[in-house]
Image 1 (cartoon, one colour):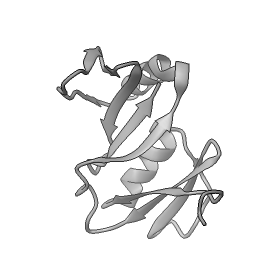
Image 2 (image 1 turned 45 degrees about the horizontal axis):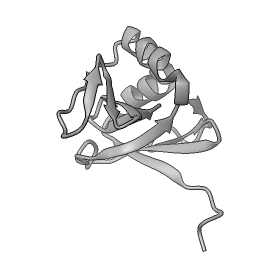
Image 3 (image 1 turned 180 degrees about the horizontal axis):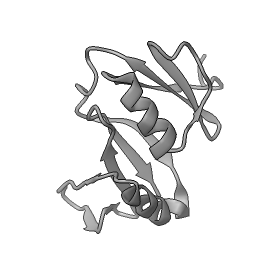
Length: 124
């Protein structure tokens, strides 16, 4: 039923202005507009990311959104680090880490948080 329909990542934030600075300026997502007082729709490649104001922002303890960046993982991590993004480091069985990039048996991952503590990931 939904297999050929697009999905949208939906991320709750407390402060929409701080979110705009992070998602637009730091991550470089394209703002599609919207009322900008309660929610903003972004374009990221062929995907959409809806950022909306909520009192429950940052309460998810799991990854909220992933970006598949392939071979561009290292330069993107370096670029985001230069913009002040702090990467998360997790100790998990069978996972090694070199700098900010984890290697889970060939799947490379870098996790970071937005200003509200939502966990985001880059997949290489």
